[in-house]
Amino acid sequence: MYPQSQILFERSKELIPGGVNSPVRAFGSVGGSPLFIQKASGSQLIDHDGRSYTDYINSWGPMILGHQFPSVVAAVKDQLSRGFSYGCPTEAELKMTELIKLMAPWAEKTRLTSSGTEACMSALRVARGFTGKSKFIKFAGNYHGHADPFLVKAGSGLLTFGVPGSAGVPKGAIEDTLVATYNNLESVSDLFTHFDGEIAAVIIEPVSGNMGCIPPKKGFLEGLKKLCKANQCILIFDEVMTGFRLSQGGAADYYGIIPDMVTFGKVIGGGLPVGAFAGRADIMDVLAPLGPVYQAGTLSGNPLATASGIATLSHLHEHPEIYSSIEKTTMTIERLLVNRFSNEPAAINRVGSMISIHFGIEELSNLEDATSANTDRFNSFFHHMLKNGIYLPPSAFESWFISQSIKERELDQLEKALSTF
Ligand SMILES: *Cc1c(COP(=O)(O)O)cnc(C)c1O
Image 1: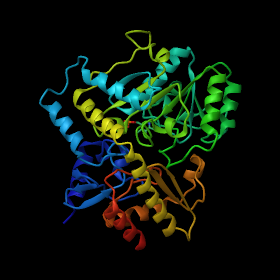
Image 2: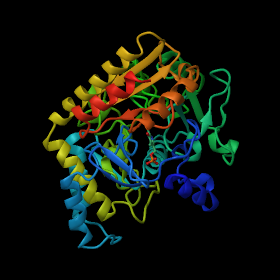
Image 3: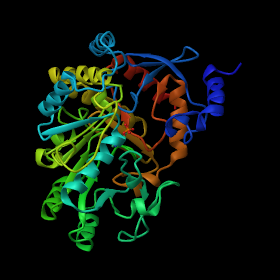
Image 4: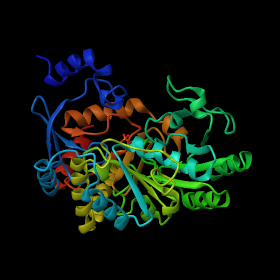
């Protein structure tokens, strides 16, 4: 008898490309057949065979409070009885943006979207519209959603042009995308020198989470801010992962560096589709209907999604101690990993409640380091943990996201599983 997940995967593959609606879910890099999940509660995912797994991804970040957190469930249920979508402004959108500004005051004005991808592509358009310039800098290995201008692979040398990172992205769409090296300020200042007066924005994951967890080196974000200021260029922090996770005000708050614009996603919707882009009022006011930059969304600020977002953010706002508590949990996970893998090279990086392990390397500070890691060892680690009821991200290039529902019982389970690997 095949497991139900495998049967469902085979059927899905006939109708959904690759059987999934987002590629990394397919277990392509770790191998094997993905789990199909039928429900989740607290720290546990339950698959179609009725097996439970402790969730160390938490929907790639959003479920920071754990699955089915009571006040979030109640808020969504309450909205359910009042309709799903009106296509008209609502008080909830106002409440949501007030809350965002309360937690991240540099979000002077905010617009809501339905995904992080939309937030990032819209922020870039606003930065270009505001400055009247076209080029922008991104960092190799940083992910800003799947809009065309971001899907670029770095060229062989810093000043060589990038190439499309996906088929279907025409060269024209990435002509103005410049790629720098994460944690390397010189690679950024070289681009500013070479393209003097042409660069509209620098967009960065202030803590990288899409090649494992990579903290910014000391002085890196400060240096970026200075370079942007000197070059009349907009600094965009992509806080889709880090926003409302590393602290109330995300990485900007955590490191004390205030960007001109910021994008949010993941935690901001508490598991329903919400994104947002925000920033200085003078910049955001270029948006239609006030200004000349067009941006829109039929379901932007959707009442159900907004209800979940408000409930999640207000809980975080009212209980700031959650941040130190999930950080403490993640430090314990870090210690368990460090102890277990002290006899082999492994880069274990952690910032707040984000953590990752790369085998076979000692240090991880940019994409080049990440791609030199031993992914085979990660893959066998992943499957060992899965057999032991622990669900890690199915790729060595992803950060783990810890939720507040991971407690002593889950950590004991992790320690046991580590001891038998
Ligand atoms: C997930 C992610 C995105 C894209 O968000 P989606 O909601 O998947 O479109 C953008 N930027 C970062 C840093 C992300 O982690």
